[in-house]
Length: 297
Image (cartoon, rainbow, N blue to C red):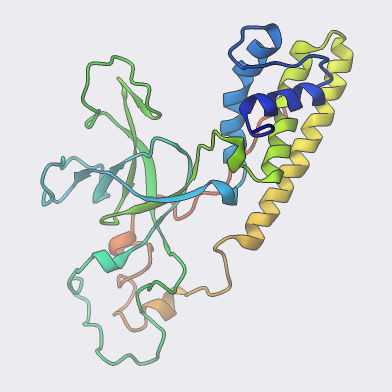
């Protein structure tokens, strides 16, 4: 279908960069195709990390690599402290947004030196676990490098993202049977929304304008113009994320959440201590996007 292939995007970028040429394939070997091919993948990955694009949001179960308790068969038990579980990084993950806290999968007893949860709550709606009708609660997690659980095989340089002979990228958390919500690598333009497509065309054009310009001064001018367009589209996407994301004003404060659960340790949704604790983060924001004029946005 015309307009929905990477080559269509590349040709739009050539037009925006003032290059009076077009390509038939990114692999054809011409000078424009070579410049585009070098920039295309990196621009795509950076732009996906620059906002929480709704079309790229993915939720999937994580693959368990290690359980610090040693109670899970067929996995390791070496997990960096103070974490309980280590999971493989999703192969197509561009940016982890958050790990949902899913206490439905846990059946822990009352923490040591803590009071029992009253059978009849003092107030309704407090200390309850998320249901299918409630928004996802983030738990603390940490992205790290580990050398203990490399995938099997004889390939000296695995092609999978986050995997090398030096180790692999992993996700550490205290959530059992964890899911992850992340921004996925979306290679097909047919999946992109219009704002992302416009931002990507401008971003790619800004990267190729100078290398392909016959008049370098003119190329610099076009590059700066396309950078401004890309920045405007990124701003629009970030505002859309704020309006359409999972954020709301239903914020459970610590004292309300713990009121019926025996104090600060309690059953917090990913708070310090408890089963979602740890020194990591609850939620990843977007990254700064780097441009050819040495600016970041």
